[in-house]
Length: 138
Image (cartoon, rainbow, N blue to C red; front, side, top):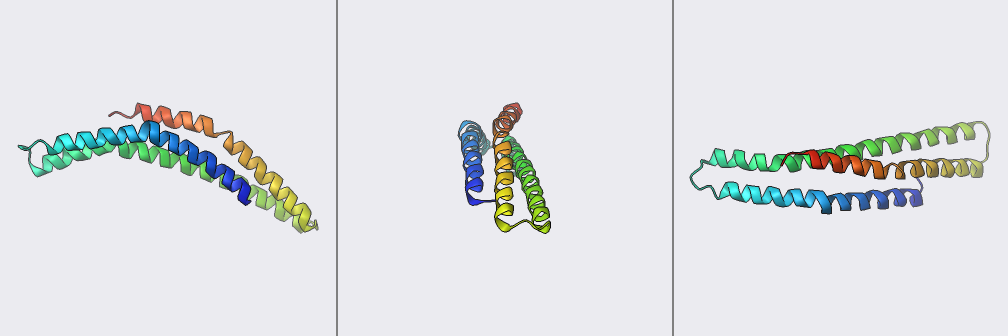
């Protein structure tokens, strides 16, 4: 993918991840640490009970991180499939005898279209992730 297109996708995804981290994940991390500290304050509990308590505290955050990772992987897979289609179209054009500038132009337009389409998916993906994070029991 051309550098400018790649930078654009990276910037938009990075902004989404930063917002999710700040507004949701960080809050969950705070809850996890406070919950874990409460587990450690239970001086009469056995080591295994405290360990299990801490594991329960970590579960919501682990689920949240797994959901975010899964959504990002699906997004990346879709974008990769789109750009692979562009590669195929460019190769077909080149194989038909087209000159390199025409092939590059096709590739740039095609990848640009992929990027546009996938950047437009970010708001709905963000809403879906937020809804999933909000549904995780604390």
